Length: 324
Image 1 (cartoon, one colour):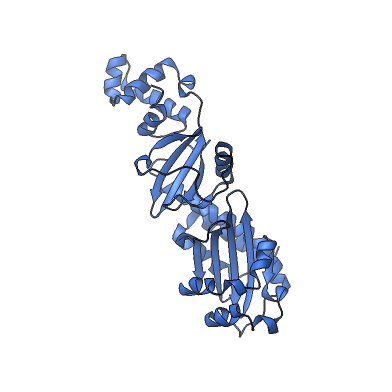
Image 2: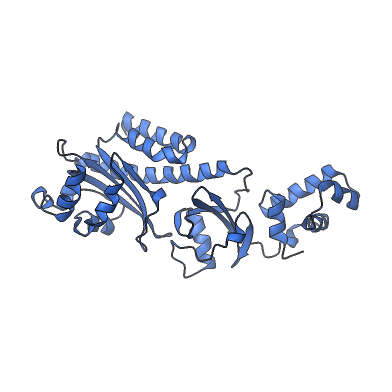
């Protein structure tokens, strides 16, 4: 591995932890220029079962927004598309699938690429079977530049999985950091959806839990309905505990396997405190009623929260509402 590639990967993972969501992909494209030269690019996440594109999942580098809509009008004649779908994970140079003479005669080139100064294309598609999501990253060069080489094709094929994993890390790390109080991450797994409940990104473990509880689910639409009244609450559904919270125009969802009976993991004293917590009593009021100090009550509540894998009093109440 040469020094440029090593430095790029190091910066990639540093940026995934440090850069805000809205700046991450743009920074990655700028850094990539030091490894593979290109004039413009597209980073897109979509679904194999729906044509709807989430705005959060389309990133254009040195291309106008209308480029995406224009492509849809000419995508049926895209010579790269079938190759990418047939061999996900493989990077394709446009000249790998069609001769230059035939390429410039296609409707995709005449009606789309030539309008956006795209002469040479290097594309990669990665498919996530557990969520029906795919990630496509394309580099473009103008006519004044040379075609992409086989060495550049191989290098991009090597780098794209790193780009996708770093992007996911960036997404989940910063959504977690935005929470005022974190929910314990020991057994919770995460996903991000749009307001309709269609997945944008998800942990693989998230998909596994949903598939176990909803055997016919294939994604990207969630197998349960998102109720407005359940936002910022923990609810139970088909053996799962589900926590939902809006972050901007995205919906952050966490799930974990529900415990068959929460009361089995609490001590008698913790159950007594949990009942008083359900009644809305303060720590001082509970301490007076049980003959304990407020500090002891606080420790018991902390222990209850830890056992339930939650962090707030309201979440304890939601978890135990059907048991007390």
